[in-house]
Length: 634
Image (cartoon, rainbow, N blue to C red; front, side, top):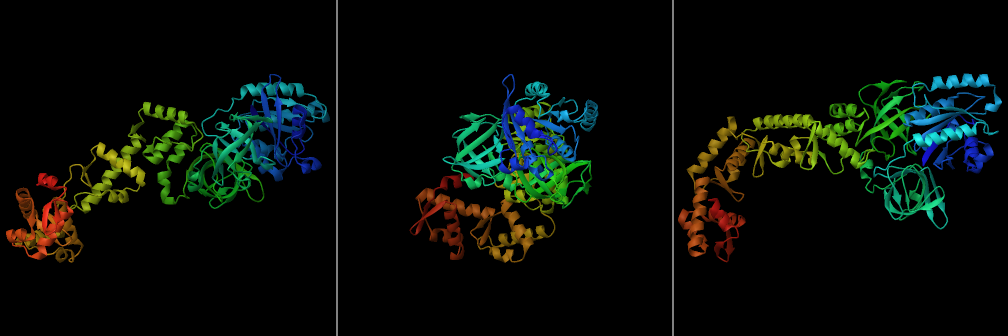
């Protein structure tokens, strides 16, 4: 099946043509029949002489209902642009033509209706005008068919061209991302809430779990219908009606979306849309910072605020990147087309293609890191893949570009092509662009070097310090650290990360504090000063103590004392020998051996208990669980 949308000015006969072709009336609302004009979307089905299925979406032509027209045009494969012979190319003809062009429609034909009301010479002039209006567009080589819906003249030729169109238009293929933008929502007795729309991106099956936007509620497909037939599975490209279990009818709203993606938090967490926009030449105002617009994507309509990327404004006829923040988050994939209109007066400014989602409006200082957007605006798959690697630096293989309008297989092929060219590679479970990651790695190395030069006394940085120093987001920094270790740019010693080849060193006031502390510890090796004696002297002394501990010049005993390394080793060796020989050690034995007072002997044994080198058993110490490990470390 292909979906053909009608387009054109009011009262040019769109519904009449569909009625004569299909035998059914697309004007379904009583007020439409009473007023003789299409207000909302109408639908009708047609089989070509070769039995190819066509679904017609008949859209309103009146300027007040252009938003309904856009809702229908968003899911079409081709357009039938209808122009009345007696009126010619009118304002709504121009707007509809521009809208379907901006929405990326690639196929179509032009139908001149009411040909029985004018002379042939006039029709020839009208055809010449149409050719001029559509020159350079997707309709520049499209057939122009002369018909009369009232008499039936020309309809055999129209049917022939529709037959050719079904062959020329490639059937929509599934990409494993099924979604149906809701253009009608109603309640059917005995079934409950029902929605209709054109299915795109993937198939839906009865019993399948789906989510509904914007409520983000999940449920199961209860029934499926296409062309008035109940089906177990519907493939992409078909007009589809869906009912549900587990979803309340209040959650099924026109402008929403049904999707097989059940976790939709990404879209609510990243509400700012980056749009590669084009302003129409006839746009009445420029697109500038703070401009309020109406965004239309699929069947979704939302007022939104616009911010500019790298220019003050887009003038009529210009193209560029803009940031759009809808008042309510919108569900759309990278690659989707959208329309931008003024809220009042309701006229079309232009449209464009969604190229990314952001968590917030960027600030001016953020723009350098958004340089990847210019590359992405090219619009092909390879540019999308490369720009995503520029954006993420290290991109997880799982879920890579899963919010883009491509299948996982297409994305994998695009990634494989970039890797084959030598521009990208894979590290563990992440893709990266070589040039980008090398630049980031060098930037990180310089940042570490600069930081460690200022703190030459430290052994290295803890992982939390790395995360604060490298502002790339926690998941990226975690993988980046592994990459830097793998490339031997940094080293790891226990919990400390250091630049390869660097050693801690002392200088200035920290060295003076260090020498003072060591001298005090050596002066009274078995009765050293308390730690607070030094730490109370300020940050310099605290940094000196950290250096002493990092380098192992002294050992910390509880929260109160430092012992010179040789002294601490002597104490631990004595305890080990006593436990090895007799299996136990008393407080008195330790005190008498080194002349410790109770002020020191109790903290020493509590520290060896903490290290599980010893274990208290009544009034004595016995071997702890890690006794053998401690002996090996001596």
